[in-house]
Image: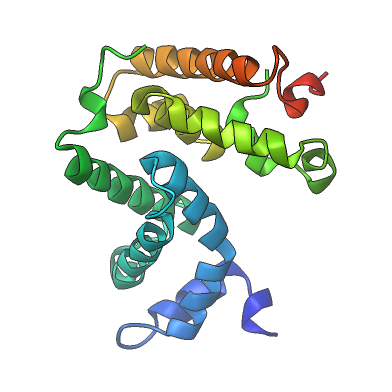
Length: 202
């Protein structure tokens, strides 16, 4: 069986075995998650130019942290936590404050686009994809990140609250406002129409 087709748990065991691990096995794990991690870093930090570097740093941290991975959660969940923390630290350094301090900013959901089957993605034109990215970029951090963690990373409301360091009620409000903000901004850019993947949800 080639490394690319091995079960995730087998690759993890190989990566953790002996010394600092089997980098070839870990490299296969990177390939499985690389595109999603890059996309998430890009949206979370509002920094397309830094997304690939941030993703690489996330995987480096994961590789050297394998000894601390206890397997109580899925590898993808553990990797997700590293990614979120790394992106939040990046935002702190870039802006001199944590985005969770931003309290005064003003369906299928927008970022579910990345999880759509190819047949449904075909409904979305390149122009619409560009506008979706443009709209997400224009949204305040507090709203954009809450929506991304909930809808792209499929985190529970409780997990989003923990990641952002705010109450469950505040998370629910931000996600609601974020989805409304996305729809409003997209309609302004798209002649009053919702994205194709929203119009075809029924």
